[in-house]
Image (cartoon, one colour):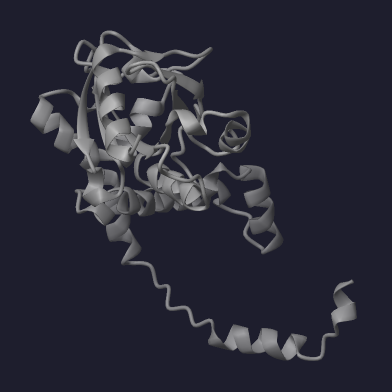
Length: 265
């Protein structure tokens, strides 16, 4: 079948709850108490489908819990979620967005797929790949299970699909997954011994602000800055940070111009 036919079948499977669970999978649209909305060619045609899953019977109050996925979504993707929240009259912590990449029998699995998966992760923190029956084979799955995406395959029977593998990590942070101890050691080696924890937290905040711009403003959405983040950006303007790297670059060049390749062996 072609992509449009696969798309229609997949949407039908959502409506009829014909996506069969696999062991330990926790896809929200598999739950009977959830509702969903489907956007075709979502986000300016970046994705074949974007699914908004709504759990309207959830308690809308913020709760501290070990599962922080919804809270991270609220923090990082406020612009995306508030648009759905207004149209559906639903609290933003009850909304999950899923980008869907479809691969029909007419498509080939090639080097474009990792880029498409990465696009979904950068925008929504997750990615789902839906395969037509031709691609549901041992060789294809061996390759696909290495990628950071949940894979769903067509069974070949009516509108029935099956979850083949689940990538359950929420991709929400970047460089500051690094060891704080290693970061502290780097600062100490460069003569900074005071305020290391504060420096780490400030850089973490700056990274989160950059991520919000990527996740939201790139698609003309409101980044949803917190009041504390606005104040943080205002304080940055008071820092005297006129740094010229030119002299240091020239010094590095002079220092290394006579190095031989054997010096690095």
